[in-house]
Image 1 (cartoon, rainbow, N blue to C red):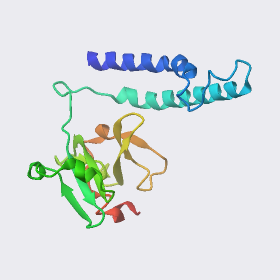
Image 2 (tube, rainbow, N blue to C red):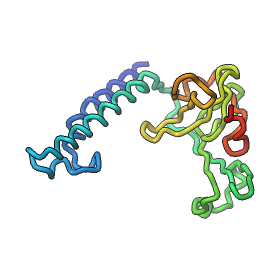
Image 3 (cartoon, rainbow, N blue to C red):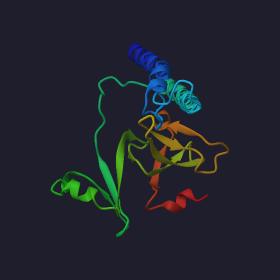
Image 4 (cartoon, rainbow, N blue to C red):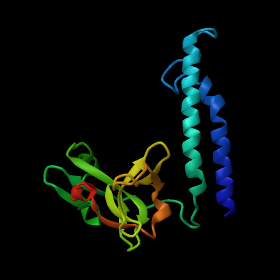
Length: 193
């Protein structure tokens, strides 16, 4: 528990220091803040844009930081992939029997959709992959698993099944109540409510 608190404190300190670092940086917002003169109104607009983005980042991060948990003895998750072939409509599990296949050759094909293992299992012990459709909260909501690039974590989107408000939750917080019932490629009808 002590390690979790110290990591949260470090992350909060890092986020608090973002203001100074990002406002003075020239490439963070895509504009050159420092190249425009001090009295130039374009610089002020760019600085306001940077401050706005930083404020949004801080709001979002406060939502996630309290939920971070460390598990003793686990420092990396297992790297696994499944893939879906949009031409043949086949869902394939990437396992030891596929080791002879050249993975990089598959990456160049646009008709293949790769789904990465989240490192988590549902209440029945089924591995959860990106793109899986989950029955959450005892069957009252259907959700899909998606990757949040900004924070580097998997989320479930609770708005998919007609939720009253837009809500994204950390997948790891709900493992005791989620169950894999399909995936977004083979069972898209499950998401149409």
